[in-house]
Length: 180
Image (cartoon, rainbow, N blue to C red; front, side):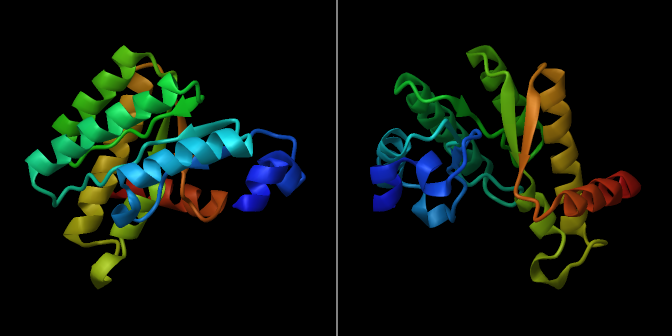
């Protein structure tokens, strides 16, 4: 990290295209301290922007916790904007009402590009040995589809992240379409 801050991310990677820092990380790291670190790192490292702030929001979490985390994610995302950092928020939600509410907030704030963290949904299809035909897979497919539809409904462009390869994402899209 020190070399990125010293040289700048573009020089460090020898890449002159757009480089965004993602805040998608293990839930236990999603703290105020980590947030403050990312603000500093984005600025010192010369990143072109940031994706997030991520917060844990899941179908099997209590609704009050999900809503609290959606508020935190939105407020911390806005702090990036206030810091002058180009930001792509993540649309989250553990059910259709949460997804709709979060999409409404992001639309009112004026975001025109919104992130979708595909890994959360792809992993749900295999977590715990349930496989692609289990109940969790169906929930994951439905939520993934709802998030993608909401992004388009509010007139934003999606940035889909977390698939291991374009083929993996294509295969996932095809399996979602078959299961719906």
